[in-house]
Image 1: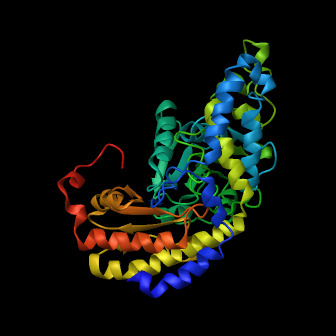
Image 2 (image 1 turned 90 degrees about the vertical axis):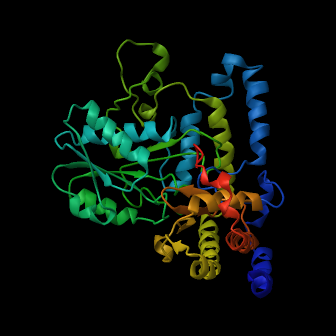
Image 3 (image 1 turned 45 degrees about the vertical axis):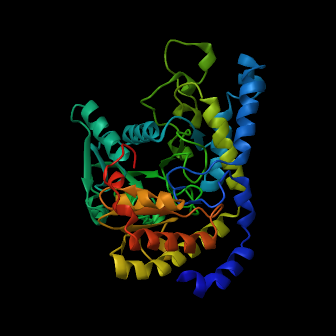
Length: 413
């Protein structure tokens, strides 16, 4: 259907694509269409060589001397500064460390320490679960002094009042891909006397971000999605330089001003280093740095332009399947409000995503009924989008999704 009408146009788009050469920098099997880079990015080919160097030379030969000789001890700050170049942060405002969840805890408690007279952490009810879980954990640990409050997504700004210490929001929603206006929301929160923690897990490497341009307070994000840092890659934390006096609740030894003085009392480092906790995980950080370096080679404006074009193409060619098979677009069409993914709702969403794997298409599913297609411009072609729709149509037309094994939910979806 789509190939006959649009093959020539798509071939021309792919031939003129300035990002096309990046696909060869990733380890992707021929014929596979990978649309889950918004959950786990593909493997950069250089990552294996870099990890072999860390293991064989830096660890195997250098041993403990590599904390200085191979600059392991300064890796969190060095990699954080590189991530900062993608996110509009100044040097010394981002550190690569820990997990997303741990960094949410650190950022929220730091913000609470700056607004200690206010008891409320506010978020939207449909936020990614770990964000809300961390809010609830802080509430439980505080013995009720801190309140975790969630409201409907459209009611967030109206809920800002004199009790709100910190607002926690995800810039690009993990299900719909909807983009929030960081600058406008931050301004509204500041007008209400609150600080904001932004979750950039679906933003970094996917859309242009300007933390300082938006006057952001804190931000966190993971390293394993669009940054291609590998499964469970270290995360990162941004703290605007004006907030570096905040006292971290997780006062680990690498956040100490003099960690190797081994002093008995905690004295936080003067800058972003105070937001570190334990010993840097060098294997994970080394893999993450490869992914970040690769991303820094690309033009973010071109990444965004192609991402939106891929999304428009997907939405256009999915319309007949919506009419025939009952898919419902769950993403917005407006470019200003759409991240680097397209989502559809369907009652058999889980089964369809599983069946697509038979046809060499990997997407993902988010309960209760969302099929999510990540758009990663560095290794996706325009032809991949048309081919995905064609294979999806085959899955539906042949009811390939209705096999018994696809009706049993796996532990990981």
